Amino acid sequence: MERWGMRGWYSRGTAIIDPGLFVPEDWESPKSGVVVFVKRVYDWMRAAVGEVELERRGGLLGARSFFATEDGLGVFHSYFGSPAAVALVEVLIAGRIRELVILGEAGAISPDIRLGGVLVPTFAVREEGTSYHYLPPDAPAKPSEEVKGKIKGLLEEEGIPYKEGGVWTTDAVFRETRDKVVRYSSQGVLAVEMECSALFSVAEYRGVEAGALLIITDELHGRRWREAFNDPEVVEKERRVSELLAKNWPRWSDTPLRHD
Image (cartoon, rainbow, N blue to C red; front, side, top):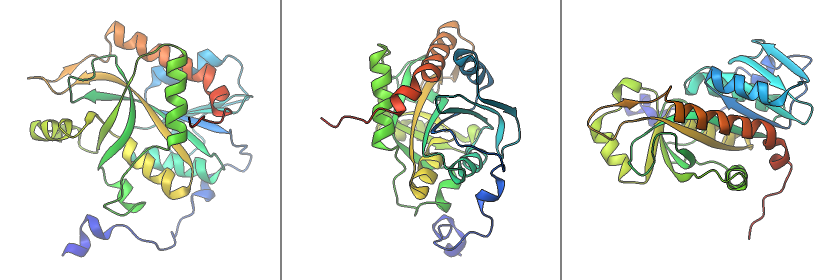
């Protein structure tokens, strides 16, 4: 029965359904895309850019709404979870987008990062199902060095402190267990979320650049779960980072990363 398990999911075969079929006929791809999952983040980014070249509600597989600016930035409000986010990103890649930033929320599993902290992931533990259709089971899920470096440069330019480390990507919010928190945090994993490993994997498979930027909105490493989604300091940090990315990412996207 092993062939029916996870190790049998990866295939080099040709897909039957082409994501290009879902690209709108009038689509003109932005140079760079930001995928978000929280409405207030989308709204902050939309307000920060002012005039836009294109704005729609729906009309793109996996997107609740999206807008594109004249300087080549597209912001896409995705549904939560790896399958929905990957469906959206597959269509964006088929539409010729070549760089993606994931702007999301995460729960701290280590005291090394605090509520309202900013995390730039360096790797992702693959505890979701979608990535196994894009990369072999033993392959690592990592962001591109190019996009990760640009995200760090943008944060440093604005004086925003951040942490680097791993994330644990899960499909099962209600099965984030104490033993896993202890085990993963001892291996350099700082937070848990629901999309990064899958999106890093599809980006690698399709040959595009992708990185992530996460805001810590809850904690799982204490005696009890501590949520702070609407804590004023957390909200303010999330707003600041959202507006920063909306206003400045096109410039950073166009700047080659220096490898000193």
